[in-house]
Amino acid sequence: MLAALSCVLLTLLVSQAQALYFYIDGPVQKCFFEDLPKDTMVVGHYKATQWNEQSRTYVDNSEMGIFITVDEVFDNDHRVVSNRGTSKGKFTFSAADSGDHRLCFTPTNVPSTSGFLFSGSQVGGIKFELDLAIGETSNIESSDKDKIQDVVQKVRDLNARLQDVRREQIHQREREAEFRDQSESVNAKFVRWTVIQVVVLAVTCAWQLSYLRAFFIKQKLT
Image (tube, rainbow, N blue to C red; front, side):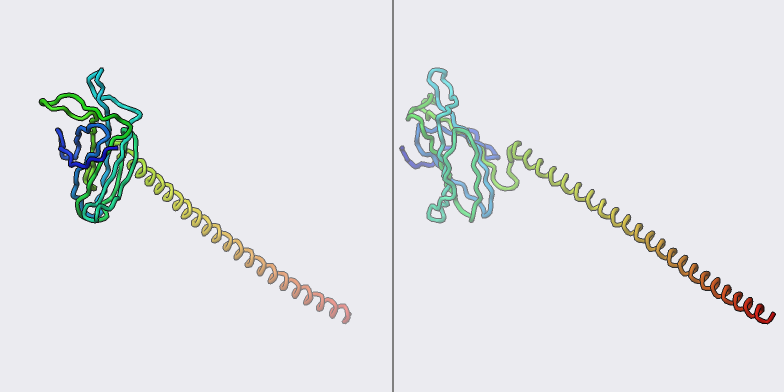
């Protein structure tokens, strides 16, 4: 595999969102540099197509692969990303420290061929499209936004369920307190009624004893 390291001439259309494309002559490594602040998240989406001489256009090649590397130039070329993917995919990494990062892309399983003539010069046989989203304020792809929205919605649903459970617990505690008050009230009434019955029974017994005593004394005198 050829590994001719060279900085990419970013050909055409470099937008604020860091969307670009360039041409590669077969399995040749192409690199460019990006100065990143510390703790910056980078999300890259890429697509590689191969020149087809018959159709005179760049078409998809399912057998093509892309080898992606990201090196920290400021840290003796410490490699933070080494990924072998298909001709279309995504990669992410976070800058551990501030400084220049070298991003390199190498097509695999492709012949070393050229593409069409552009402004009198031959361009590469591989067209590589790259869209980088850098930092929190970058434009993230709609699919990623949908995933984030799904997570946010699930969190909201979970919070709503927790609120329902909390309200149910409060309601149960209120019902338990009400039942406890009713039970204590019933028990107090039962105790009072029992005391009244005992008092009435004691008074009745005392009256009966007094009556019987008086009756026997009267009978004895007569």
